[in-house]
Figure (spheres, rainbow, N blue to C red):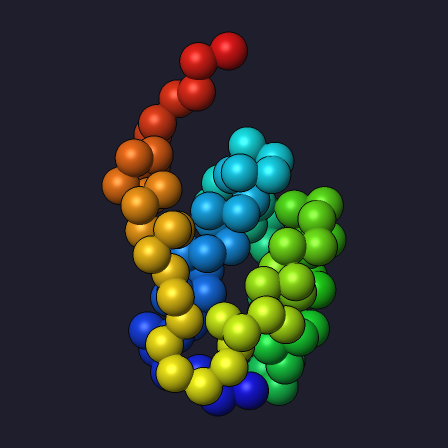
Length: 93
């Protein structure tokens, strides 16, 4: 997998968007209780740990999508979502 720092940021932006859309869960809430990873952990093993913490398959699903390919991922939908649903945003129940 080739990924630069901004590609990683886009990955987590897209994951955050999908977690909220599918589970009404934000990334920071899903990561609470995350344990330290081993020094030589792979992206796959880290994403599997995140899946377990959030009780979802979104992390590995997004990693296997073109997001992890070459070039910068298309995060436009996730950016629009973040603009309209900033941290601290409360849904009306």
